[in-house]
Each structure stands twice: as structure tokens, then as C-alpha cells.
Image (cartoon, rainbow, N blue to C red; front, side, top):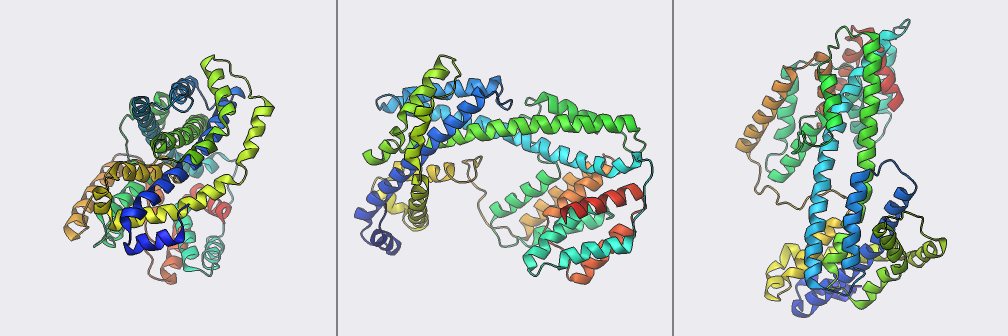
Length: 464
């Protein structure tokens, strides 16, 4: 653990020759202990899920697990070998990149099928034996009371966004484009990386963020999407509506299954990656934390290698008691260590180079990312520079052109879904409560499609 005196001295730039190597080694040891313990836990959970017949783990998942198993056997459960470690790190990095690519595709389909779910939800009442219209004024008042009953401005804004995502969309395309332009203007003077993050959020919610490998991955989802794209929603027969509802359920099932398995395997990969990175720099004490669970690891590795997927005996599972409370302690130590790491990144990178600590420094930065809550964060350079008016104008024009191409080529039903999903992600654009009130009243009273109006209000009530 890095003591307070060392932290204070590093913050002031004192005794860096002595403090930086010690502090960075301590953080490497903390990462090793935390990642090592987490790795065995995650590995055990995935293994037992396969043993239990969890349908999320298909043949491809099992094949990847076998590859990981070989890495574990050659590194963690074998004497340290620098060449094997380097090779293992390259393999693990490739696995991680492959899963991130697949998850991007699944995220795209999640966004797309959410739009079609929006459409189907608003058509459903067309097939009811009768539809009872609602009192528009009463419904508007109920929504407005919900929005403004929150005493906090942040809470009110979140409720406004909920409203925008559900109530009928009756907005001209030009008004929508103006809102997109205005939302970008607030980033003037901000980092370009922040603008790119905002653009990703907008494009993703609208189903416009098409990742690499879209045609090659999850072909069944591609075919399901094609069926929805080719449907005419204006005069949709009930049988076709029911068929599409079933297809939507199939798509959600495929997405859920894939997401569950890749999430679980990525937890294994991230923690194993961090273990391998920190192995040469960690203290003997931190290495022992993981090896306290070595018998569990040995049993899993042997079973996978022999393709004998049997539950781990209770007497071995009982060893997890040794980890009780330790992850919390490691986490606290990581917080103080990463505060030091941030200080070093901001102010003392030249000192790191002068002290020949660059390899360890890069290891720590990557470990921090791998062990964060963002499992699928990518290791790539951010766009440098600040966003000026010219950059925002160019970016805004490109975004609007992308929306124009989509909105002019698809049905009005999908257009409304896309606009609603996008409005939910924009900064709240109402100037005062009167504008919010007028929007809610006009959205409900101005909707001439009774089925859509009733469904939208009911969905809003479900959120409320």
C-alpha cells in the first residue's frame, strides 16, 4: 500500500527518484493481487455456467475458453517464462479485440431492434377489438405533474428525456436538424474527443453507427433486420404484425445470449490480461493472493483440457472463503494508487522516462483501464485538439447529412422512432417550463392516430 507521506511527496514532486519506483511497484502489486483473485472467480463462474448448460455459452465460447485455458496452463500454472508471457499477452489482446468487435455488432443490433420495438408498440392497439380514446388534457397534466414533481433540476431533465422518448413525435425534419446543430454548439472550446463521444451516442441511439464486421457477424440478426426493413407498416395485417413480434423476440434472444456470454468471458480476459501484465513487477506477497486459489484453478484447467466438464468439488470451492473481504481492501488500495498514477500522467512523464520506468508505467495505465468498470473500453488514441466553430460546423453538416439519408429513405414510423431515440440523448432544449408544457400538450392532443396516442401515453405511464 502506498503511504500518505509518499503520496504527498509525489504530489509536490519531491524525492521522485525514490518515490516513483516504489509507488509504481506497489500499484503493480495491488493490481496483481486484485486481478489474480478476480480472475479465478470469473474463470470459475464461466466454467460452472458451461457445466450447468447455460445456453449463452455456445461452441464458439467454449473454443475460446479452451484457448484461454492453454494460456493459463503455460503462464500462471508454470514457472515464469518471459517469452511465453509475451506470447500470451498478444493472444489475450487479440481475443479481447475480437470480443469488442462482436459486442459492437451486438450493440448496433440492440439499437436497431429497439427502434422497431418502438414502431410495433405503437401499432399494437390497431389489432385490438376496440380502442378507447383518452382525455388528452388529463393525460398531459399527468405527464407534466410527473416531470415537475421532482425538486431537482437534474431529475426534471431526466424526466423530460423520458417523455421525449415515449410521447408521439410530431416534429419537422428541419426542426430536428436545428436541434442537432444547437446541441453540438455547446461543445465549442471543448476537446474534440468529447464531441466524438457525443456523436457516437447520438448515432448509436439512432441505429446509424454501423461497426466493422457487420455483414460477417450474427448473420441471423442480419436476416431478421432485413425482414423488418422490407415491411410496409402503413397497412400491416395482423398476421404480419404477430409474425414481426415473434421475430423481434427472436432477435432479442440472440442479442441477450451473445451479450451474456461475451460479457462473462471479457471479465475473464480483462483480469487475466492484467495478471500477465503485472506478473514481472508484482511482489511475492501479491502473487500469493492468487495462488491461494491455485487448487481451484488446477481443477478447472485439468477438466477443460480433458473436456470433462464436471462441477468443481465442494472442498475446493470452499477455498473461496480465503478471499472474503480482500477485494474490498485491494480496491481501496487501487484508489489511492491510481490517484498517484493520474498525478504522474499529468506532471511527471519525463521523470518516468528518466528513471527508465516506462514499461512499468505503460503496464499500469493499461491495467487501470482493464480493471475499470468499462469492460469493453478500447486502447486507442483519442482525437486531439479543441473543437472550434469550423470543426463543429463540419461535424454537424456530416451528421445531418447522415440523418437526411436515413429519414428520406425509410418509413415515417421508423423516422419517428429514430427521432424519439435521438431526442432522448440530446441536452434538454426547452428554455423554460412553459415550453415543456406546450410540447407535452401538443404531442398528445396533436396525435390523430388514436392507437399511437394511447400506446405512447400508456408507455409513458409505465415509466412513470
